[in-house]
Image 1: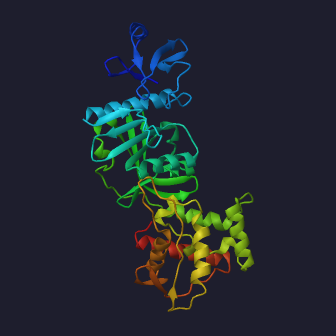
Image 2: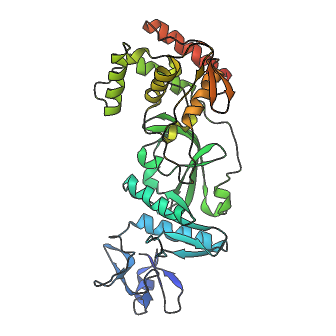
Image 3: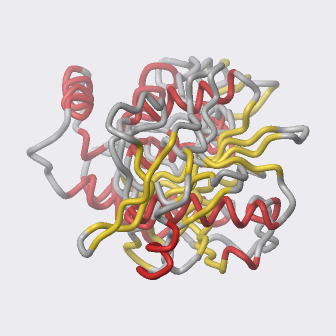
Amino acid sequence: MLYALNDQEQLQSIYQKSPAEISQLKGRAYFCPACREPVRIRSGLKVIPHFAHLPDSRCPSIKGGESEEHEAGKWLIYQWLRAQGYQVELESYLPGIQQQPDVYISGSKRQVAVEYQCSTIPVTDIWKRTKGYVDHGIFPLWILGPRHWKKKGPHILQFNSFLQSFLYQWSSLYRLFFLHSRTKTMTTASGLRWLSTSSVTGLFHSYGLNQRTFPQIFSPGWSPPLPSISHHWEKAWYDNRTKYRRETGSKEKQFRQYLYMKGYHFSLIPSVCYLPVKSQVQLSVKPYIWQTRLFMDHFMPVSVGAPVEFPEMEVPVTVNQYKPDPVTEYAELLCGLNILKKTGNNKWVKVREVDFPSTMEEAFLDDRTTLAKLKNLKIM
């Protein structure tokens, strides 16, 4: 670790200190902020200067070593919050939940656990740690390190299930937070929308950490229009119809078998079975799989004018415990396309039939027609 308590209970850091300064500090007493055990300074030509526990330490905070980026980021966040007057602790072990956040804000109406996540860890560990905080009334703030910030274009970010587990949702916008400790730059990725299993689109706003207060990072203070997704969605429809993917996952194989047993081919599903639902960014199953199943199982068998009933769908919550309803979002889009009519809360009536295209030409025409309607609805 890059910091420790001195004999006056003051937190000291040796991050970026010169060899001469470190040499003067080596004779003094230092203690671990978590367990209060003695620690010693270690430094050298091939070693980043840091405080280390003694070999027989039983400190619950020992995690097998951390990167310089992680250590520097925690220290930066700690200093930033402390300068704003927050009662903040570094690596404070919480025995009640047996967890140790990187930075802990206490002594206020709302406790906050700040986790600076530089490495890639199992998603189940993230869920478990998040749940531990939430169950004890502590708000978890996950900030991702620079290795997870991978842009694929001006408004496109590389995405995966790992990043998905850090999503927040406020004011109908999905967000992620990133911090580059070397440049002291915070980046907020806001308004995130699903493009594929490996990418999302959104607005990316970077700023010097000291240019914002803690509350301001949750309210960026700007609301420009979100990037258009019409081109991406049109291309996704086209690729889904024209490119055969031999190597597929189990869900895709089951989906193709499901269609085959009913006499249909996946390249000719109606375009309304592949719509841009906002909460898709929270889902692990591809949109055309779950939407086609809903369409075929609960829409097609119903007569025009009859009520349509859709089942609920299990969706993991965001870090701030937002649980969406993608099925209702999908039904609302079908209402906008004049396929359903809303008659009450989560109640709809079938307005017209929608057939599977018989040829690729019919499918392409279906795509163009649906895309034009979605643009008129300001969905794309």
